Amino acid sequence: MGQLIDGKAVAARVRAEVKAEVERLKAERGLVPGLTVVRVGEDPASKIYVNGKKKAAEEVGFNSWEEHPDASITEEELLSVVEKLNEDPAVHGILVQLPLPKHINAERIISAVRPEKDADGFHPLNAGNLSLGKPGPRPCTPYGVMRLLREVGCNPEGKKAVVVGRSNIVGKPMALLLLEANATVTLCHSKTPDLAAEVAQADIVVAAVGVAEIIKGAWIKPGAVVIDVGMNRMPDGKLKGDVEFAAAQERASFITPVPGGVGPMTIAMLMRNTLDAAKGRD
Ligand SMILES: Nc1nc2c(c(=O)[nH]1)N[C@@H](CN(C=O)c1ccc(C(=O)N[C@@H](CCC(=O)O)C(=O)O)cc1)CN2
Image 1 (cartoon, rainbow, N blue to C red):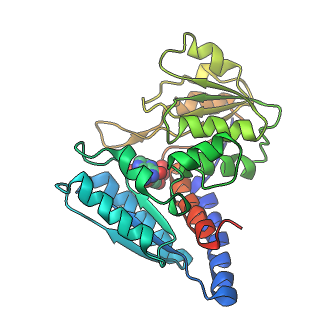
Image 2 (cartoon, rainbow, N blue to C red; image 1 turned 90 degrees about the vertical axis):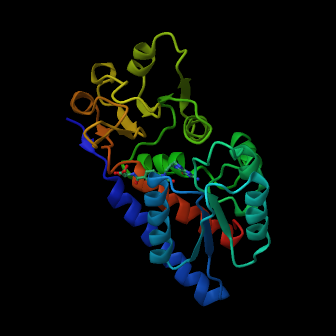
């Protein structure tokens, strides 16, 4: 029976580490990291996540602000908001909460954030740096997964890792981070012919599809580490992951629950990226 990976506890540890570094930065350089979150409109989930980000930022000792334009804001107006934040020396990290309203081109907005202030690691330059193995902010969710693996003593080097899902914010950067850690990585997606066979070979499985329980417990190789990034809201209001949890736990060595696994790490690693941006990534 696989052990649960407690994402809430690890996230609290990451925040405590950031807080200690912020105190040192204040004492030694008189520098207080600043994070601005841009939330457009009234998406209810975004409101919850942004509140979580503001709370975490305050807890670790950052200055934190929210820009909250109405959903009717034009793309040009939103670009001006980002431009103003780019020019503000008190703001070290900028994050544009996704999703954005449909009339706004999210790629254009993300590309307008100055790469050094890109707290999400989504800017094309930072995505390129990740693919080249160069330093820079890493997308918070996959960055958090790497930390969870470290916490349970799972070194990806020499292991077979299967990532299911190829989104720009989770699947692709996840595969690159595992590759950087010397895993042999397979990136699966909706056109993969035999997903069960791919998953069955994996020492590390990362599920980031967005379909409840698409990864069956019976596919999991005995002893594998299973990381579930999926967050699927069911009709009864409960959250389910992408992995058939109970059956997968029977075979896994370690497994993340949903909720309480990867989710809390997303916000914790945002604190890490913002601190590193304030320090100038030294
Ligand atoms: N600009 C960004 N937008 C979005 C990102 C992102 O990293 N940057 N990721 C997601 C949303 N997200 C953070 O923004 C996020 C999602 C979920 C959680 C979390 O802690 N989830 C809990 C469950 C919460 C619940 O019950 O609804 C958990 O898994 O335990 C944190 C952050 C999309 N947008």
